Image (cartoon, each protein chain N blue to C red):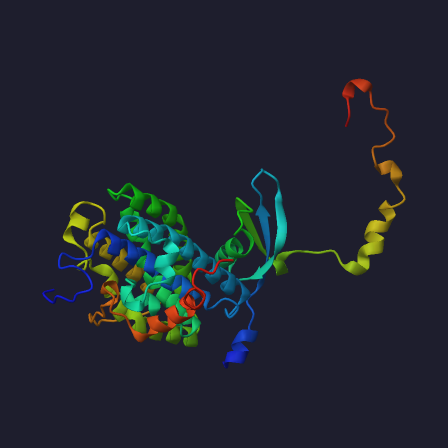
Length: 100
Length: 260
């Protein structure tokens, strides 16, 4: 393999999720290349937590994520547009309940 | 050690010189690694090696800061880093070796880390409180450096035919520079006997164990040669250090006292 072939041979892509300091959910922060899970975590540590952003890292191989198709956007999401009654905005909230 | 022009006294390196050894190792290796910034083989490696450089520069500030304090001549960490000449540096020859390909850089990092971690663990027990505190601050960073470099040595050693060959030739090229780390003959005997510095033997055992286990996993062959290149710890350097310093010290030499 020549130098240029080698540099074209990309390692698999991983999606990185980091949990911040304050007990929040893991949040997607970006993606990176790595040969396996251990390397993905190591790389994520260097790429995404170097300014003390997190206390926990999840890495998921990008190809393992199932995603909705952009062309399905209308059938998937439009029907919910016209259904205001699905929002809990038609209840009278007793004063005793305070603000919700 | 009967020659009168030895760069250190006949009783061996002083506490000041020992602190220079620790600081100069970090400084020169950090500079070498920083030369990869923007040139790494992959974005992730580029960022990782720059991070390691920054960790080591942080440690340099602590070691050289204390060295200046111990010397008592009013020199700051910056003065020691930027205004000394090559023969006043006390770093190992290993860390001034040229970067070569990324495999050689990684092998140099791995061999250094494998010594650095047990050394810092030993120094955490130092009878000099200030030394123990610097070791305490550095040891977690260095534990990560070793974890990362060991991981990559195994991956590349036990990787493709080409990566295996490159890692083996890197190991063969650098092996004779490891011996200098493992003996403390250059140190004043009182440094060790008073407990400021740990015993050389324990550090060497930890180094040998970790290195031979990792190399075995990486399917690499530990060179049999016991030839050891020495000199860095007493200020006798290869020509490479001069080039490193010329680049690193240029600004302070050309514009003395320049600040941001």
